[in-house]
Image (cartoon, rainbow, N blue to C red; front, side, top):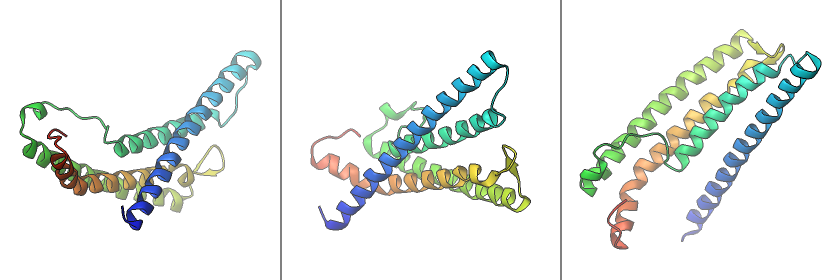
Length: 173
């Protein structure tokens, strides 16, 4: 393995750990915040004024981070109706087309969500009384841009991985 490939593999592993850590921190924080809100409401008849809005933002972050993790493992939602009946070459071609299409849609989402975040910044929108909204919304363009990148890389790598599978004797992907 070349030195450059080794560096990229390490960067990919670091990114994977960072994503998994982000998912874990968000999920644990959501559970703790929701539990605190329930406790405060039931015992003291009060709550954190920012708690419900923060939980909504955390759901957004968790959803995008989860989608990013799913794209990393190529485990996103799909409906495979004809896959098992198609020859390997046709399966490969359809997967490449789907990856390019998914990358395009995610790039479009990234572009428009970046425009949304920029308008939120320009208008000075705030959440939870005085937190700039764009800080909490920035996950949208970043997450969709990373998903677009991942699917583009998948589309480019698929023919090479098929070649690797054929040389090792594994015909099915």
